[in-house]
Image (cartoon, rainbow, N blue to C red):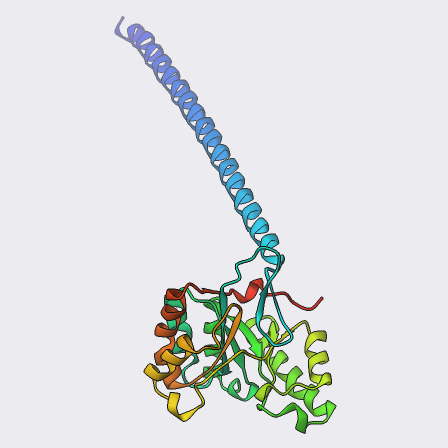
Length: 275
């Protein structure tokens, strides 16, 4: 009798176990389905967010492609259409010698855009190359100031070509793109150097004023004072400075002084390029 009673109990227990397994499998399936749905929804949301970010970046890039300023024949910065007129452009030549990175860091802290015009003979060591890359990665525009700072008037066309194109090659190798601007040493362009620079896609410019190479302005206080208070400061002024110790020390006061006078600092990316 007892042996006959065991089978119903086993059968009942088996039924419970089978039912329990089925219920567990169903719950697991439903959970997996829920997770799949949530995962798909999350992926869709992420894709949508990525698309929106790409659209925003594309719109920003398109806006940046429309120049707001152009360089005049005397190298001042001229607004296009209704762009702000009371502006000044900051530029630094002979980089990256010894103080360019310090200058760039001060400008970055002040959210002040600028162009760094580089010489090729300052781009021969790994340290110098790394300095240029850091300056570029901080968002600053890079300009070509020739390889050896030679006067274009003293060179043959072939020599001038080498002075300019060699720097373009160096800069492109270091930062992945060619310089966007060209400034001839001493402001001495020739018809050939100007045309070659434009053919290379660089905007050619000289400057409105600069003082940091004059002995009486080779200290930070005197330099900051003259750069902000000179009678030559006006709408569209193109300010020339150099990779020098006293210039680096004066940069914060120059930036704040210009802004206190109501000047906006031109983003080089908004300046017209050769077609």
